[in-house]
Each structure stands twice: as structure tokens, then as C-alpha cells.
Image (cartoon, rainbow, N blue to C red; front, side):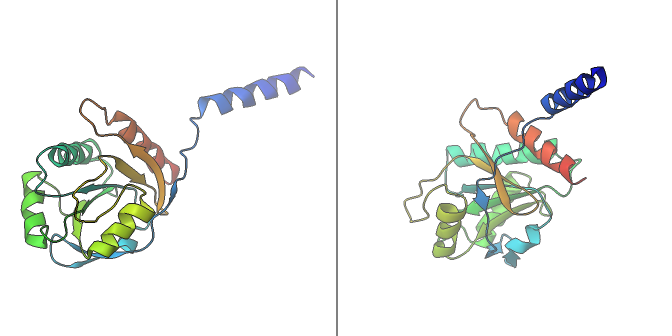
Length: 184
């Protein structure tokens, strides 16, 4: 009996020491957009990768530069995870052409092999923003969420993270590392 109780106690302790699994909020469908290089970017190229997404526009003077600085910080904090990708989708596709996105990426010292800036047809961007990421509309109003979205290797959305002034991105880094350990 003593061994049964000891085994049960050890199992309970092991269960308590494991962090809870990250929730699943939906799956990102495949998409085709245009990268800052002018080349087609297939969403399926992110399969097998952990990635962080956000929605920005280059003429923004408030939240977008803060968000892009946050993405750069994430890029630096995860330099040991080269498979982690960062994806910034524009909500202003009329203005944010590949050359404009290239210049913007340069301002934030984005590593072109890790951080992609994507544009494309407004309906496709709207579908991703509204239906896949559940963040809002791409309708010309230039209003957008300031949250980062964590996506796992299978394309499942695993978390939303606030980027408002004073918010720490440490929980996002922690969750990126948790996902990286799952399949490492």
C-alpha cells in the first residue's frame, strides 16, 4: 500500500510541475501574399516552424513602430532559435508595396531570413486578419489590433500577447521556448 501511495504522490508532483498546455485558438489557413522582396510568399513555407505574427502599416506613427521594435526585440531574444519566424502583415496594401516594406524592414534591422513583411490583395489580408487571426478588418480604415499572435509548427494559433505601452513580452518569449521544446 505504501508503494501505491508513494507512486500516486510522485505522479501528482510530476503533473503539478508541468506547465499547462497552451490553448488552441484556431488554425491559420494556407495563403499566398507578396514579401518585401517582391516574391510570392506561400504560407505553407511556415509549416514546421514556430512563428509570431502581427498586423501593421508603415505610415503608422504610434503603435506600429512600437510593435516593430517589439518584433526586433523578439528576434534578438530568440537568436538561438533560427527556425522561429516573424511575420508582419500590412493592413495598408495600397501604400505598403514591396519597396516600402523593404525600407521599413531596414529601419528595424529585420533579418530577411527570419522576419517577413507581407502585402497583397486587401480581401486576402482581410480574410487572414478577420477570419484566421480574429484581430479585425483590413478595410481602409487603418485601425488594427496591437496584439502579437503565436503560431505553432502545425499552424495552430497558441496565444495572443498585448503590446501596449508598458506590457512585457516575456510571456511570449516563455511560450515560444515552451513550443520549441515540444519538438526539439
